[in-house]
Length: 539
Ligand SMILES: [Zn+2]
Ligand SMILES: [Zn+2]
Image (tube, rainbow, N blue to C red; front, side, top):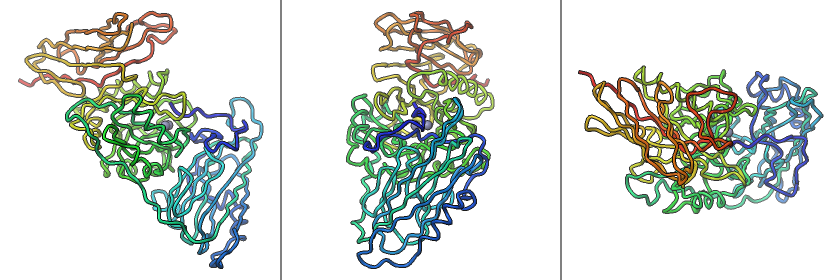
């Protein structure tokens, strides 16, 4: 699940480099302006900086140069505030630290929260080349050099020119936000060139088979506390065949996965793009590819970044569309999406909402003859005790390779599993033909069709079959959690059929799919399939 926003007023442990000051989840819903007004809003600071920096070459052995930038951001400040830093020749390392005031606010009113990152001399334009790292609100300091950088930041040349420290004041208290940024320019000979270790695009695999993978995971490269090594170990422990690395708003982790992948574990580069109007996953990026996040729904920038991901062969997947945290609800629509993450971490009411929306869209898409949007489920695990692989996708792929796995997900040939202990097989058979998850069955309108689900690993669970009319059949499993459920329909009655397996409710009852009441009608999801589409054969 997404990192829950913590109270920014709470003190943090300065000795713990992974201690989050607050979540990386952005935003202030009332803020309207987008970018690049740093000089206007943070005027005192930026001007103060300009007065203290220069572009003169440094003499050999020159002492560190320290710049301090302070300023005040009122309600209505831009989403991103750009503080120019003139970097002279001869700088070996740029080290930045920052802080801001946290005045008391009434309960329920957002207090001050401010993210940070940096762009180099190539510029800070949205979609430009200058990105050098972002740590959201997770760290109070970072450093970049040619050979090394704080996780979340990209090692590389420290070229002279105008760099920009970028503040993202995603919540501003009614009193405003006073910030203080310190930049230390350390001079000296640059370290050796950084060598990225990208993961290979294939693992050993078993040919055409069902592969299990968690496509939404965080590390210390954004606001997770797990090292990449720990995430890879957790994926193996969860019985996964593949994972996608999706740190927020940075590509820095891509370069470290190489030695952690292996014949038994495919690791794909990705990113979670956390805009002010929702989060989306870019899955299967090119190694080192960065996708910009600095826009809102009304800026109309999102489609071009979705296209950028599609050009690279990756998937665009809106994440946790109904997460209630500030700026986490999805407001960009589903036109550019390849799938939607309807199940994010432990099952909660917002997942019910996501499944309901997704289900409604299935019928609309099939009526219009368009391709339907597949469902996905991922853990979004950041730190213990969040469980890597709960849930995950079980995808039918031609092999355990980047392209084959992405093809399977794009086609919706996947079901969503709470854990590796849940096993499932789902088919529709009729008129001498059979179709599986994500496939189509074209048959005479009134030909009898047998819908069959075989499942294990859900003790006391309840199987639900749903069509475009809603739930049409439910049947509980025995205490050993295994069973086969069969139900008959026709293509004239159902445009699609999909299955859910639910745990019992908290009171031990199975739930009832066609009733209404004050409580949620079902216990947590254990498994959810993509639909099998039923089409009526033309005469
Ligand atoms: Zn998110
Ligand atoms: Zn996430």
